[in-house]
Length: 178
Image 1 (cartoon, rainbow, N blue to C red):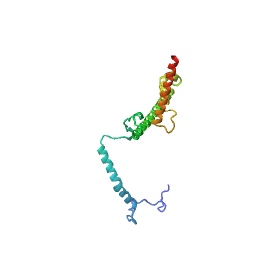
Image 2 (tube, rainbow, N blue to C red):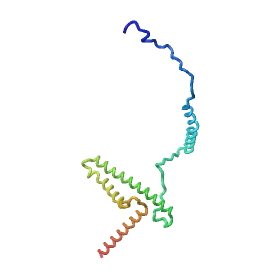
Image 3 (cartoon, one colour):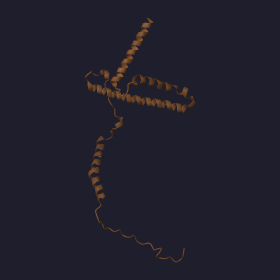
Image 4 (tube, rainbow, N blue to C red):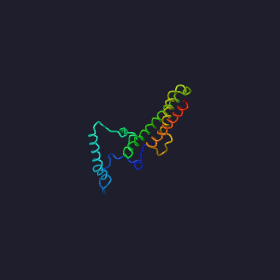
């Protein structure tokens, strides 16, 4: 670098920071709208939320832990009691969803046992597979062939037909033995 520095090319830095121009030519609405929003909307909602949390105390309710009381089965409902029939149908739908989740868990247990055991899966996973097979049989006997618009009434009628068939087969076998 040369010893003589050209002052026009390399000016010296200022020794103090220059003051900004404090003049405002027009009013900026964005900060004002933000302040109004926080005072009119956000503050009351936050205060109400804090008040509700204080009132609730330690008993926090979680929507996914909702407990439904068991209602009577469709067989316990009178013929013209539509409210009881509706509640029984809703109970059946909840039971159906629970049974579906149980089947998913059992299927996952079988799959994880097969992955874990590898070549020895047939003998080591036999109890898990037997439990899954038994659950599949019970699930199919209750819910198979009900169709898309299934409900408590259709399931009950299927169960009734199955029981009548079992009684008929038992009577036929009894007649054959005599």
